[in-house]
Image 1: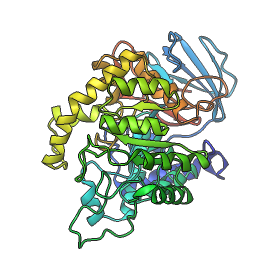
Image 2 (image 1 turned 90 degrees about the horizontal axis):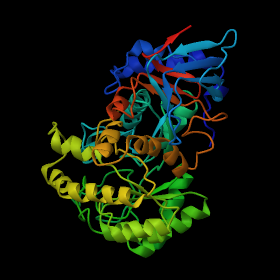
Image 3 (image 1 turned 180 degrees about the vertical axis):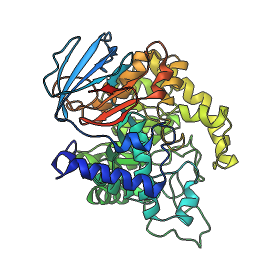
Length: 457
């Protein structure tokens, strides 16, 4: 997939600025959780040669920060890195003062077309695919402004609206992060993600995501790829935000999960498994899925399986538990589903600590909008509070996540030749990880989208 089609769009400066202004006007965008002004977003322009200067650089590889740091960008690529670089005549110099420069963050578990103020069942009865697409454009910009320049989107209420959003971003029609999309998640009848959880006399139109048995699952995988999905999301266990089978229960048989993996591999693609319960996690690992998302019931046997299956990664989503349970926010989540969340919390946190102790490579995801879009960086705070070192948390959201999505040759670390996806935060995130929640500079592919920390010439 091309890293960005923006560079090939004629008049890209005017097109980008017009798209931003139109989007902001239509949606009344307030950049919830991002804290940036509409004027800042609308003034973002690419430059031929840009030199960025900051107090320090954390390059995503896990080594000591470079301090002070300078990075030269030519077009959409990183051209040079050093403590002191010459500034070519005519180059755009951006000084970030005491800020820390980092690779653009990557979130492996989002739902950009979803809203935190609308329960997914209500969305299927009271909204339209067009609404999802428009809100998706809104949340894409919010997510980008929060410093997440790449996301893996894990499915949507209305199938393939994520495909449309990805395509619009790549074409430069709307601003947002780079996206890999699932199209429509694959679920069993009565399981997590069964969109027909109403009266048996009510049929939700156009939602055909159910597949039972290896043959139906194979067809569902093919259908998703035909309609533009980059990977497959299969629901191996029950879910929190769903009726039907409990989250701890395995809902697909080992044979069914394996059928999805075999067909995806024929296409050269991956399978991500939503999995909470221990048996479902282990079945998914044995079947050869690429990621275990949530992974709440990660026990010692599951850790051992992950160690023996190096192509399968654990991607927890932990901040949403703290946000929804501890902060007691006004929520659209029904009480029965909140109770499921309470029951899973201690198990999920214990599983994360188990993975840390075992030295597993851990991906980073958030499940936004279960935690609101734009608050994705809360995941850093939660993980550090559970015992992860700040540097390890940052590497998880950069280098490791890039490796998981097979984009390590273009993003994830600040290295010469890679795409200029860069963010900056005030102060030092190794001393206070919470500064990641105050991103004040965002560049994606050499284009500046946010610049409160910058003083340029």
